[in-house]
Length: 180
Image (cartoon, rainbow, N blue to C red; front, side, top):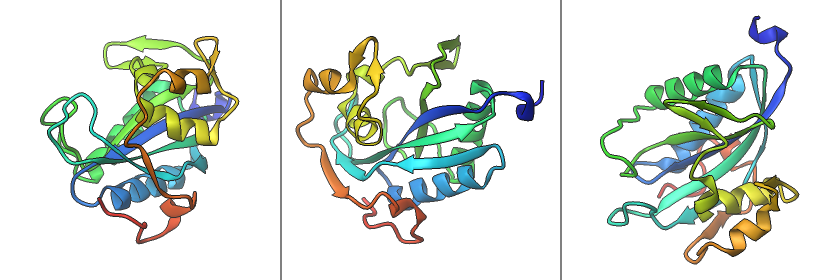
């Protein structure tokens, strides 16, 4: 089955970074994904400044979530995201460590998918306010694990999460509003 034979799915991608110019890197990543004939960026959240998670002795992150439509398989979408990170010079040195760009598949339609390096829904998504806050902005009616997204956010510490730009078209700008 080719990509064009597959039904189109909506996927949600989490984007973030905290070194270099992460807003520009996220903008470039979304632009590259949108230029792919098998991916269409439909909606992008505001840009958020968030405290580091997992490894706290590093600069704050910028985060956003994007909804895309794609005919790619989950594996092919992951490969495209990883290729995009590499093209933007992402280096993987330390888990949860500083990075210029990170692109995670959060959800892929209603599919559950599990392989060694790809789990959908994202296995730590429900523990991360920096993911759920921007996700709720573009998908406020979303239910995760049988509960509204707002309930999940309500049980997390979302202090320190600050919307940097309410303009959801920030990613289309050659010079996004905030670098880091």
